[in-house]
Structure formats: C-alpha cells, structure tokens
Length: 215
Length: 309
Image (cartoon, rainbow over all chains, first blue to last red; front, side, top):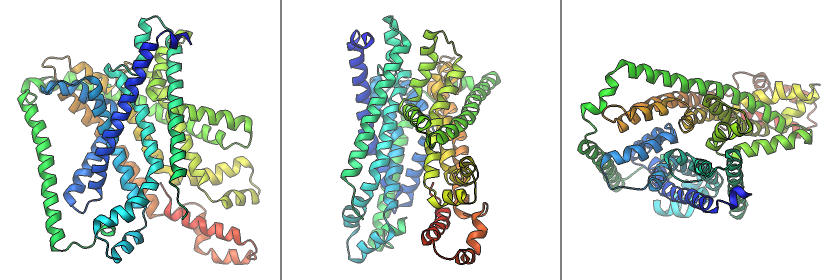
C-alpha cells in the first residue's frame, strides 16, 4: 500500500493521463469511425474504396508503429508543436477508428434486408430510412462489440508508455527512480487495469440490458 | 449491401452521388497534398534522407530484425494455441475446482494489457531473482494473453454447437474426452478458424510491443535507424511499416480465404455430410419419437451452412 500512498502525486497524474488518452481517443475514434463506417456503406464507389483502403491499411499496422509515426515522425514535418499526450491521442484515435468503423458497418449489416425494403416501400426517403428504421436497430446490436472496442482501447493506452507519456504503463520507470519495487508497482498497475476493465464490462452488460428489445 | 439500403438511383441521385464522389476525391487529395507538401517543405524527399537504405548492410540488419520478429511471433503463436486449448478445456470442465481457477486466470490475462504483462516479466520478475531475456518476456506475455483470448474463442465455438452433438456422442458410448476430442472440438475449430487466424494477426502486430522492452525486433531497429546519418525518422517508419503491413496482409488474406472457403463448402468434410445427404431416411427409421433431436439435427445442417465467424 505504501507504493500507492507514498507516491499519490505520480499515480494521480498517471491515472489522469491514462483516462485523458482513453476519453480523447474514444471521442476521436467515434467521430472518425462513424465517418469511415458511413463511407464504407455509401452508394458512392470512391467513398467505399477510400474507406476500405483506410481500414485495411491501419488495421494491419501495429499500434506501436502508428505511435512511432506520430510521436517521432510528426515533429519532423515542422508543423506546430504538439505535446506527446495530444499526439498519443491522435495515434490511438486514428488506430481505433478503424475498429469502430467495422463495428458500425457490421451493425448496419445485421439489420434484416426486409426492414429497409419495407421502409422504402412505405415511401420513406433515405434519411428517414436510416434515422427511423435502420440506425435504431443497428444501434442495439452495435453496443456490445463497441464496448469491446473501448476495452481494447483502454488497454492500448499503455502503448503510450513507450513514447514518454506519463501514464499507467510508464509509471514503473518513474517509481523505480524513487526506489520502489518494480514488481509491486506493476502488479498494482495490473490490478487497476483489471478493475477498469471490470467497470467497462459491467457498463457493457448494463447498457445491453437497458436497450434490449423483445423481438 | 448497397442495393439493400438504396434504391436504384434516379437522375438526381446519380448527380448527387457524383458530387459526393468528387468531394471525397477533393478532400482526400487535399489531405494527401498537404502531407506531401509538408514532406517536401521539410526535405523528407531529399536523397540524403533515404541514403541509409542504399547500404546492403542495413538491409541485412533489417532482415535480421525481421527474423527476430518472426521468431517471437512463431513461437508465441504455437504456444498461444496450446495454451488456448488447455484453458478452453479447463474452462469447460465439469469439476468446479478446475473450472473456477481457470476462468479466473483467463479473465485476468484478458483484462491486463499485453505491455503490462511484458513489463511484469521483464522488469518485475528480476526482483524475485528471475532474470529473463526480452525475447522470452515477449513470447510468454503474448502466449498467455493470446492463449486466453483463443480459449474464449474456442469455448464460444463449442458452446455455439447444438446440444444434440454432445448428447449423440455420449449416446454412442464415447467418454467425456472422446466427445470433446472427436465431436465438439473439430466442429468448433472449423467454425472458428477465421477468428483464430485473425487473432494470430493480432499476435503478429503485438510483437511490435517488444520494442518498448528493448527486444531488438523490426520497430526497435527502425528506432535505431533514426539516429543514423540524415536522421531518416519518417523514412524508416515507412520502410518498416511497409514490411509489417505486408506481413499482416498476408495473414489477413489467409483468414479471409479460410472464411470464404468454410462458407462456400459447408459440409465437404466431417460426418455431417452423408447424414444430411440421405438424412431423411435414418431419421424416419429412428421412429420419429424424439422430435427435439430431429430439430437439433436439422439445426446442425443450418449451423454448418452459415458457420458464423
């Protein structure tokens, strides 16, 4: 316990940065993923091609390499300086957006064909077909896999540890300088992650039950 | 997919779609153009930046690093499959004293980030006097994490099978191990093969985490290259990134090929084929008493046909 309460300042900042990267990355991934997911089901072939290229390219790149591009590569371009935390959020958001896009696309695909056909048959225009018929049904089937993506995102925040962002994955090296036992520190980090993941999976079950519909 | 959501476009919709297409092209080109301009502006295209890649010694080292990445991936993948089977079988055990600890272990390793596991092995264990090469830290961390994930995948595969499969196995006198080994697992593996290969792609990508605990694999070598003459930071990221993407695309391609193959030829192998072929007769001769069983067996055919990935 002394490892925690003797170094509350570091743990607090580490946890804050982890959550900052998590929420920042989640928002970016949701926005970007929604756009790319929409592109992948769009009636415009070029938009579909661009969406597919983006997803296939980024999905087959290790997250560590995406971080490498942003943290080491970005400053080379002579653009306005950004802190490593912001660059980390960009990297993890762009990486996770591909998974969000796939989840959204799969969710739209789970809606039976007849639903869209029936909606069109009663004369709804495309916008209303989507907002009134397809998306409300897709939304429900999207919730569980989307939460799994967020759990993966939370665990992926540790990759930022390799790129000098003080977050939970990196706290070991900071505490080692203060002479703490590395094993104990890392076990506490593991415990914190288990707790956070349990929290998220509880949220997943809760939302799943809340939005469940009787079919 | 598209034909479901949209009507056949009329003249106005065609025009609108074209406009959206043009807008997409313009936005993408603007983005790429801006990045390209920044690259040009900051001299990323200069020959001096790419100079290091003209040496054959550098390429020899890149292939050496690639070999170390593949060595970690290969061993980790094999061990993860083994661990996955052991944990999956343990989790489906009838004995609570096996099932509960195995469940706890699986859930724990699935919840802890791989990097933290690697750090536990590499930085944590020396406290207890266990020193470990980075290679083994990478392999063991990937093994336990992907093993737990694969265990869940296999368990989901077994549980998605109709109950009649297991009951039929017991009915013809197989023991617990026989039912699992001869009936349940082969079907579960076939249904889950695309997911298993996709998880192996994740394993390959996660070997790049070894960079953080100083395992000299591809990305670590990319970092070393950045301090070479001309400081080729982005250049080495592109070259190494290309190698990763090609490797992952090959594995993903295998996964997609397997998925298409299992979907196209649902019952080419295995005992289900003859039964479904002239299936009606034996069922009728069976007396037609157990309607549930018949429904189950029909369910089997349906399941095999759609085999969800």
